[in-house]
Length: 308
Image (cartoon, rainbow, N blue to C red):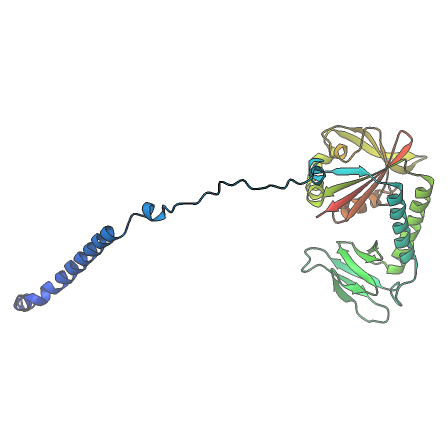
């Protein structure tokens, strides 16, 4: 230890060198700060650039009032009564869709057999369909085309196939041909009901899909301030009776009133609880919702076009 102290005393310059370097850096930093303070103006003065104000008046073009009518009518539902010509065009389109489904599709389409479904997200939802002549079933995803049918929806116990604008439900363990025949039989009843009940009023309205999903997720909004149940005629269900519909209820905003009898939804008569569950699931993704209800002996049809 003494040897080290003696060596430091002999080399005093080397022992002071770190202090000299530290002091030099401090002086350099102080000098730099002084130079910046002297030669650089304050930031407020540097940014104080005179702004040229245009005092001349600009000519403004005002839009006509009718361009804003669609906005002031309402956010949730905007409606109008459509003409008889539009109604006839709609009926003709429905008949055309049913006629396309009534025709025979591609060879082997009716023999397709649904083995099973894996419901869920678009990325992994699959349906297993066994084609006639094949030994094993093949998996198909949403959007795939199978013998002229588009896979539109995959659920836990059934799949929805689209052809010609008609959504066909095929249950697990069922062939496409059997499902098509069942649909045509059910739709035949709906067509006869359409012919027997002519709408005295046809109302076309617009509704957002976000509002539909929000209201359907909250079950309390459906039953809030309302009383309704199935309407039975000779022991058979013939629609859904709305005994009381308050102004705060969801159906009131859709146009329903106390005493109305809902007969059909999207052309399907409400004569089976199973159909009602199917309709409840389909309206979440349907591009259009058509409701036929009876009010004081008159048929009123509401058509809701869903905006994304």
